[in-house]
Length: 24
Image 1: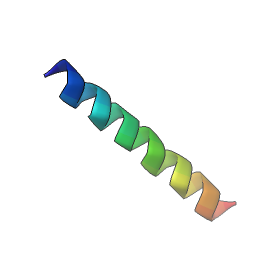
Image 2: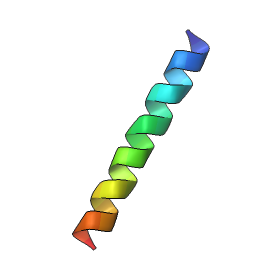
Image 3: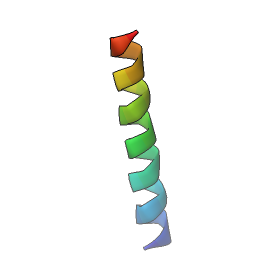
Image 4: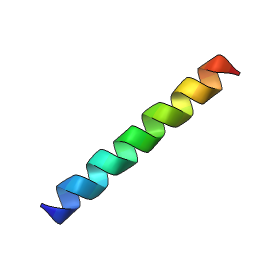
């Protein structure tokens, strides 16, 4: 459960970073 949450948070962060990269 904890591991799944960490992966989900990491994935969300990566998506946010990718959006910033594309926007920039």
